[in-house]
Length: 325
Ligand code: AKB
Image (cartoon, rainbow, N blue to C red; front, top):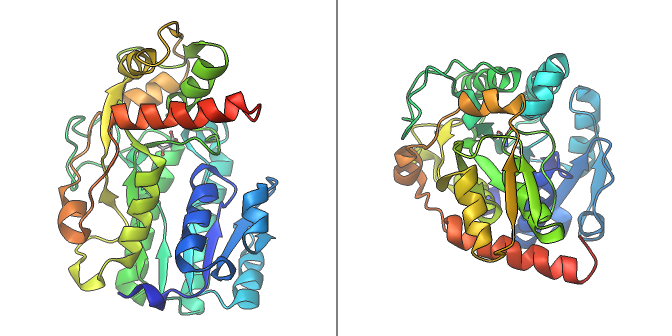
């Protein structure tokens, strides 16, 4: 499918961790005026507002999505608005409302307005304690024990249903924990892998909310963005899967991450005080088999633990020195 088919793009959750950087990458690729960022309540960054259109919507109110779709003649949606795993366990009803009804509204609007394509990310949270934890296969047990995970499995099924039943071209990946330097993640279990960098730079100490030996799959933001864009531009005829691609980049324990940071900041001290998020982390895989994504649309990550750590510390270190962290 050609890149030029997607002419007016809407990004929901544009103020979030992934949305804030993906929107800017999409604007660089498809033109500033062609990528409309939408948020809910969060104040958008200056970069988001000054480089292209920004609007407020509430994905749980379908009419607010339709208004923006009509105003800008949208033909493609990147639907990133979601409640993540840790907040989802504190507020399961809200997680259902936003993640399921929000997705349903987006898919219905996309169907009704005959959109070219929709991107909706799933997550490693779709897996559960009965799933094989190492090199987790593409086709496997999906019995999550979090509300976030339940909405991700149901969301994958719903997206695939819209493809089969209505021919709506919905695509998605099961993202691992995402590490980034621009916008902090909000309310996930893998947030420690981002917070640790900020605290290492600011205070040379961090108290981690999972055990030192907790291993989870992770990915650096440039790879996260590349995955979304590459999958959306992939030739549909090559795809056997649609909204549920396993995706992998690196896996490491919290202790290994702290040790890697210590190579750059030798005085850095990390303590471990597991809280309720440990049980969520323990229900997720340690590593992922992403061979379907590699075969069907050429997925290949660029960053490993060492390259990601060096880049994070360089970026955050510069911001700290300029008093902007
Ligand atoms: C979370 O921790 O909830 C997310 C995810 C893995 O989907 N980062």
